[in-house]
Image 1 (spheres, rainbow, N blue to C red):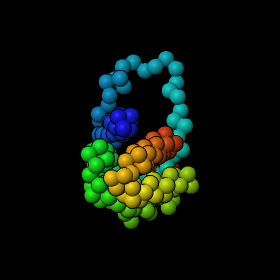
Image 2: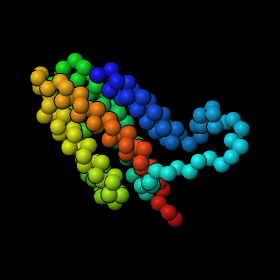
Image 3: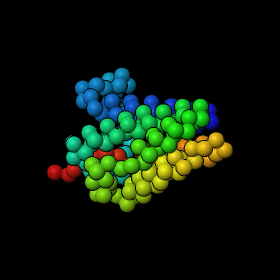
Image 4: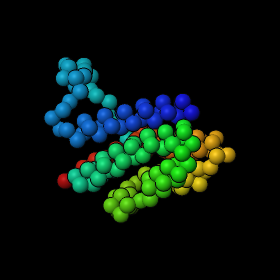
Length: 161
């Protein structure tokens, strides 16, 4: 369980940092204030998902919601709080209309990861029983891997003019 918790903390910190940096246009990490590197920066090879400014803001809010929910789930799994696991899993696994509209125009792989993650949340809620601790941990880990896979494969982008 400690490896899952460590992965959650790492992912939450990295994601929240990226969200905050992108949400505050004048704020730059100290490393970006240093002299530019000698060679060109490597290209971002992630697949762009074109989003309007409102769509990007909605996704940022959803990512914060997911991070908060995953933190609650991590503690609930640790302390065998099955009612919280069921409630939070149902909440995070239920798509809202705005997200559904954004996902319908996203690349197929993005939609598949989103659908699989929602299915995993449903499985997590169903596994919230005293005799299913290993299944809870495995499903929670699978959700975290989907988060990592999606963020490693896709990036939010502004529509082309």
